Image (cartoon, rainbow, N blue to C red; front, side, top):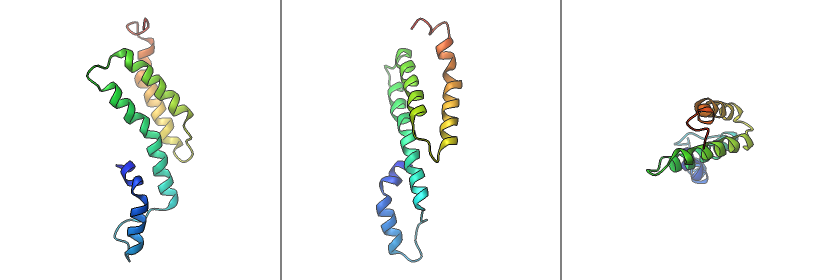
Length: 108
């Protein structure tokens, strides 16, 4: 939803400029920038969810994808969204830590 909102930024700004008082909430430039950063941060999740949610996905597909997601998040520019990025990274590490240490997965 945020992605669609950011895609329509120019139209939303133009619409709000034509109406007095604005018919919709006017966001600041900083708020628009934060939304763009959130979209960029969350896009890898959308891609990965589609990959590992397919009917033919296996654990062999999940492990490299989760690792790639962690690396992508670690390298992502986090100015303005540090807390969200660090929380996502922490939660991913906590949730998938056993995947790397489990005796069932260690031979992969």
